[in-house]
Image (cartoon, rainbow, N blue to C red; front, side):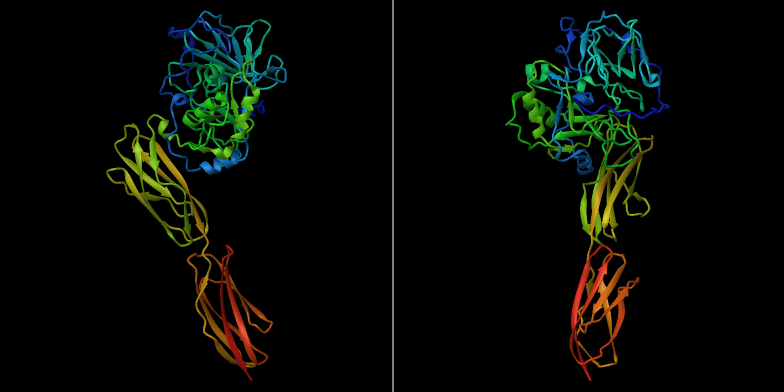
Length: 507
């Protein structure tokens, strides 16, 4: 099982909070399946509409610009783990659910986080399975599916009470015929504010039907204080941009060979290629959620550990959000110090209703944000010189005249260019008289430098840098002979240029 969820001590109360959801009391029956009831029963209808994010293919969407950093934070060499199966520690292994009819009696539920929970009553049977078993001290999820009304009821930290009611940490009700999200900032029975049941690997799909046509759910150890559509809640205090936000979606790379896996694992892996999986909670890295079933073959499920974090890529899912502004500004790039980034970009407005747009770019090197000129076809040009070696995050943002926006960021890696010292002619000097030489060099970066001159007679000189890329050095030779002089100029990134010449000293 995964590490129990680490929730923030306090949950944010958002100004977007709406009136308590009571849709479960109002929804009319929709093509139910009252003959399919009980714990972990086969579900004969799709969970949510076909255009819901859970049911949308992502195999052709672009790779997120920060994919490499996100994956590194989750563990490139860590294998997938099936956080489900037959039994674990004396209890069914996974997150169970129960299918009930529309006549199931509803019971009261009290919540620790009532301000972000949908109030009861909930149609929870007295024998509803609890994640980890009745004695569990983990997340204790309870998932109830009303198959007649196609309503989903989910609880976190659920405990039955002697009077037949339930007490829970939080709870959420989802109308499976709607694409409506939780209010922004609200949790659900999941840390990300997402429903749990639609993201589970279920035996009836992976084995009985042999196809999973929706995204899956997984956990990671550390997340960012942020969430992406369709998530609505975060559970972290870290602002590290390389940690995954809740709702981040990954997919198995198209070229990953799944032919050598057992049949049910191939079904899971194909779903990860086609639909991917979303970060839904804090827990162990790369733990894939599923429902328990005594028919699972745990040895076969263990094959998932052969699939590593490096076999995935993070998907740019911004285009899935209704009314999204999608910015295309190219991917990461590598330049040499002093070179200019030049590229074209564009954006798409996927239905915001805007009539005018503005765009800015922040190149990430401390320079001020610049306004971009937009053409009629929504394209723009980027041009910026990077003077110093380093890694910079550039961000292009497009704003609409009705308050919507979209952005794209990419990393510019600028490699150091070592100083280049101008050619030096051989020279001559007299013993005891100062020999002088002007040394000039080029360096496209505006970084600092220092010079060391080895005179060939056992002595050396050091020259601290200045803004100028030239300096005069002097030395008194105390004996006659032919001496090999070496000049080294180093910049503060470690690049070094070297030039040698000879000095003949006479008496």
